[in-house]
Image (cartoon, rainbow, N blue to C red; front, side, top):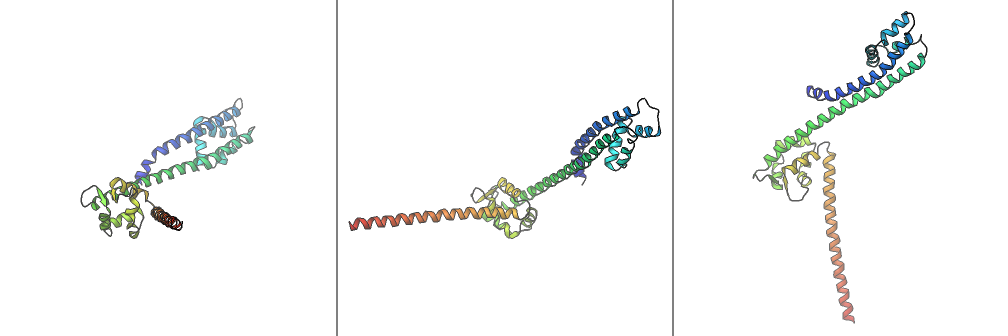
Length: 252
C-alpha cells in the first residue's frame, strides 16, 4: 500500500498542478468581477460577503476549492452575487466550473490513480512470474546446458515448484503437461531461458490465455497434417495418371 502511494505521487503532483491552474484561471475572472461590482460604492453587508469570498486571487482559489471538495455548499458562493448586476451570467460561469471540475477533472484524477495502481500491480505480477519462471528453469535444467529439453520438463511435472508456477501463471497442472509444446515456438524441442520466461509472461492471466495458445498449436498441427494429406493425394493422382498413360500406350 505504501509503495502504491509513493508510486502515485508523480501523477498526484501533475493532477494538482492542473487543478490549481484551472482554479487560478477562474479565480482571476471572479476576483475581477468582485472588484468591479464593489468599486466606487459604499461598503454594505452584501458587498462585504462578496469580498470575503471573491476579494482576492487567494480567496477566490480557496472558494473554488471549497466548492468542489465539499468544504462548503457551492450555492453559498453564488448567492453573494445576487444583489449585483449580471449575477445570472456569473452564476452560469460558476456552474460550468463546478460541472467541469466534478464531472471531468475529479473523474480524471480517479482514473489516473486507478490506472497507475493497476500498472504497478501488473509490473509486480510480471516480476513475480519472472522470478518463479527463472527458478523453475534452473531446477528443470538438470544437465546444466542452459536449455530445458522435453524430457527434463516432463520430469518436473507434479513437483511443488511447478505447482506454484502454475498457480501464478493461472493454469492447471493438466495444462502444464502441454506447456512445453506451447512455449517451444521454434520447434527445436528445447527451451532457452529467454524463450521460457517470455512464454510465461505471454500466458499470464486467466486460463483462456493458455487455451488460445493451445488452440494455435492445434491449428499448426492440423495445418501440417492437411499439407501431408494433400501431398499424399497428389502423389496418388500422379500414380494413377502414370498407370492410365501406360495402359493407353499398351492399347495403342
